[in-house]
Length: 486
Image 1 (cartoon, rainbow, N blue to C red):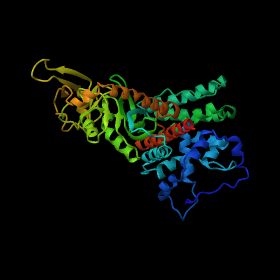
Image 2 (cartoon, rainbow, N blue to C red):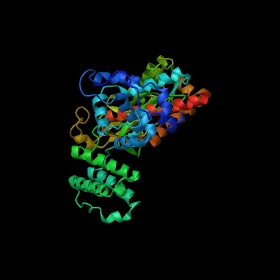
Image 3 (cartoon, rainbow, N blue to C red):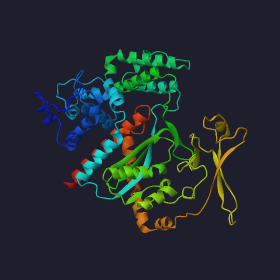
């Protein structure tokens, strides 16, 4: 049961916040900038309003998730810090003497209350609304790009992943007491996951028997991460990798296992829309969605800036219909006439290869046809035939007994004359220089807010992480711009 009314803090100790949480504290500024009652309105249907045990206010639980995103902390560490950090307690709407929640409650909140909440669009829409109200967003330009996030459970085997986490605990301990080497159990010699799990539990137990070591923050953080890893593997020994994550390609020679976040950014560096997908998805396919989502927040758009991934024919036609200038250089393979089996093969501009609908990338390509003839040249892409033979989606794609699997596209000169002319103008070149802004925003998300690696498994968990991280960076940017206006 939850209360639909905000409760007042009647503690005699609340005056301490005026002393220890100054006006320029970021958490105080966020509290003053945002009316978080919209979270209660969005989630109250998930609670009983007149029966049951009194629940922790959903706004407070949501703020815990924001603190995780702001300071890149685990569930256990954010709760632990909220015991003694007065700025945390102030932000959470707690009295200084209030007790904190159990960390497991955050997991339940994510799974039971945030499902189907549309949190990503809700939070981005709220920040854009604030920015428009404050007169911060004035331009009609958005910059589009995607950033990749590695899955928490990568392509390493379960035992390799656990070995890596236990090794980090040992290294952290040795920095403070090298004599602990003699107290740790012997490493397992088998390659069995169960043996590695038992070893990790023994490492945790050994460290916790030494309170002078276990309570050191640097050690405690590594122990908490190891505990989470062991709990996850105990529950899913036979599903060690993230079942939703997929292999994507950054270049022709490098790949990652995880997810992509496709984003639109205003010229003032406020994220106006985002879509979280699995790692193999093509960037260009989400341009229209990003434009529509940005418009739904109240933003007016007359210019879109992106790299060559967004110059495919459908996007050029769409932006033309909407009277939007598309600042994206034409690519000879993306701006051709309609391709055969277009729905089954997508071009990955980072890798420079086509991918089939099963997520397998071509292993090589070759040019066919002669220059100067009446026939256009083609590029033929060759796929790994051994993968095709075993593929679950081979029906209608691979013919049994075939010795090769290829996909060919015709190379043509750009057919969109107006776009070709536009990309050579000084206006186009000047606008294209703004693309660095979204790359800098991607770097901020990854290096300051833990967005380089997923904090949990599954696409839903990635969407929650994306929603809170983007909400935080948008609020930080709004606060910065408001200071500049003063």
